[in-house]
Length: 256
Image (tube, rainbow, N blue to C red; front, side, top):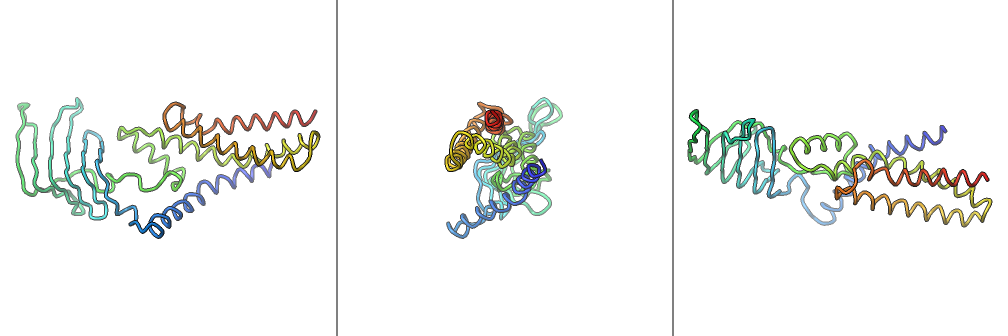
């Protein structure tokens, strides 16, 4: 029992701390050093929709490194989803404290329910959002710790986006460390069964084949979860449940 707990604990440690760092380093080497691409933080991002409280942003191009927006439209709503203000600008620059918009139009709702319109060449707006708020996920899910991925799921759900894929990855991060434990139990069950009904070599071959099948099923079910046709929790845990039952079945039959 202690050895099983140790295996499970080691699996969690690897999944939570070692794997994210290793994956991040691997992706960096492949993209930056092998493919000669710039680091992710300097990539341009296009066609961004961002929702925050009662504000909706549509940004044609974001330059994260320069903290510059191109083709910006901002709608600000009241609780009834009526437009209170609108900003359209060709360009926006972050000066460290506020946004400086250029070549734009500012529309503001008046007290009588109408709207006023003002054209501007350059105007400073105090907005809640900063450049980093508009940036897409820079880390792949496998590069993130469980806590980071959980916070990201909460963030994109609060912004009104579909978080299904990241919810599946979140539950998979919890489920996958149990793989080593389940494979160990399954291997023992196969060994006991083959000890009575066959040779050791056959048992080893069967164990390797089952491990391969497990990984295939794990990836296949995750992909079904990504499409939304299976609950994220089930998508992550079905392989563990199935192979866990299989290991119990082998144990029971090996005893008879």
